[in-house]
Image (tube, rainbow, N blue to C red):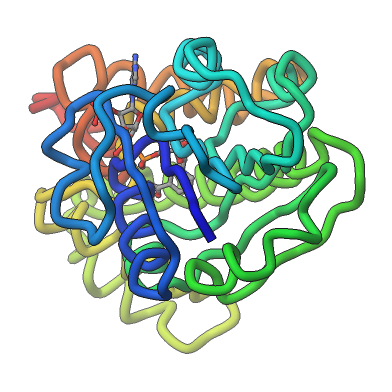
Length: 268
Ligand SMILES: NC(=O)c1ccc[n+]([C@@H]2O[C@H](COP(=O)([O-])OP(=O)(O)OC[C@H]3O[C@@H](n4cnc5c(N)ncnc54)[C@H](OP(=O)(O)O)[C@@H]3O)[C@@H](O)[C@H]2O)c1
């Protein structure tokens, strides 16, 4: 199929590469053009140029306002299926033309391995089997209602963000109490309290190195989207505050595990 990928950041780049490797004819556009190079896709100078002649258009951009700005430049002919994969929250989907609302669960590595989980809702998703296949291990069909995918995504991210913030506090507490934080990870290993995520995100927190899989600034965005959708929940609000402290200190491009910086005596 002829596929346009708009947005080749951490997630969009491996998605474009996997689609091209599967034999699709991929044209990629990214604001920073260099990130669209070397993916096996042809590189377009504008979103409009990328979309010309495409049968499927994928947006994998930072947030709702970015998707709106990029798609403003584009007219989708009848019959073209738009897969909107970015996490944009519950308000934005209704503002867009009919599309497949398909945010994804999974981060850099699952994106590289073609093992994302797609949360697909909205019209046209039944036509995307060949597009979902090279990028995903699982597609959850959430029905015809545009926005159902985003709602499920916020639920998934409430869980992920809660885990990471609880982990950050647990490791910070261990360090304050002079307990080896790796001994904490060993203590829970293999038991009911364990989760692979504890090691995945705990090791970078302990090593104080945060190469980005999921940029902190986007995690803070998602905590805000959850808060906006459910203002009565205290945790997403607190998590957003913590993350924004670190973003404002200049570390927004680091991984979300860098939220632990907000708990250090010296936040750098
Ligand atoms: N990383 C994850 O673990 C993960 C997992 C699931 C879902 N998501 C979601 O997937 C989406 C993409 O995330 P990502 O991790 O790939 O982030 P990323 O690497 O930061 O990529 C963000 C993309 O948005 C573009 N962008 C940002 N502001 C823009 C603007 N004003 N105009 C035009 N383009 C703009 C960036 O272009 P430049 O390259 O020019 O900056 C880049 O293509 C987000 O909605 C995120 O929440 C991420």
